[in-house]
Image 1 (cartoon, rainbow, N blue to C red):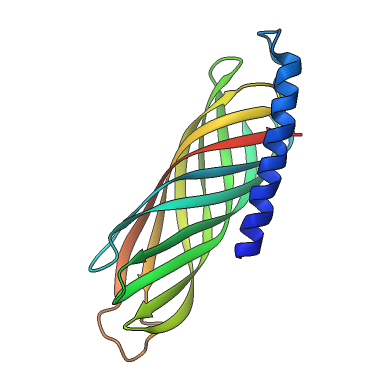
Image 2: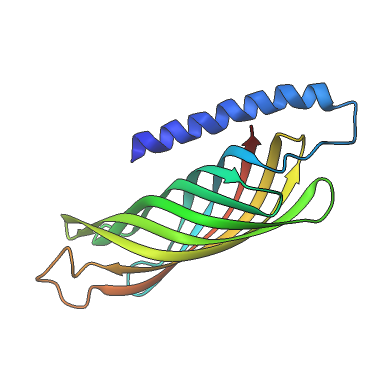
Length: 198
């Protein structure tokens, strides 16, 4: 999964460089021609708040790579890879990453500004560490998010987004001999990002 993150981050970087070159060519004009459909790639970096029980409260950075397709100016589908990092402490901790799929609704406000909301599914893998013993466990959870998008050019956009993942850190699956390891947890992500539309 770490290699996937590097690949998606690299794609977002290439898209950003291409977009900045395009931005120079369009700098003379205030008007942009919005792309109503097609593929896009993007990346987000931000702040993650892990809110749960016991030792699983923490604040971390989060990285995300995205690939999507816009059907029209209102609707898109989106998939991605996300790295939530590690949280907890040396005695009881966890590290989570995973894949997402979502449907995205877009509301254009002006030629450049748009609001959007999305809802989808997270398939995650968590590596638990209790007193030096590690185990892995897979999980599925729902998430919702909303954000504001600004089009610098018709191809290059910047976003600000807030997303909540309704997860359950269930270490019972990984550690059969440890009691009271079922933690209700919310992962709350506030991030900024870039998007390049082809």
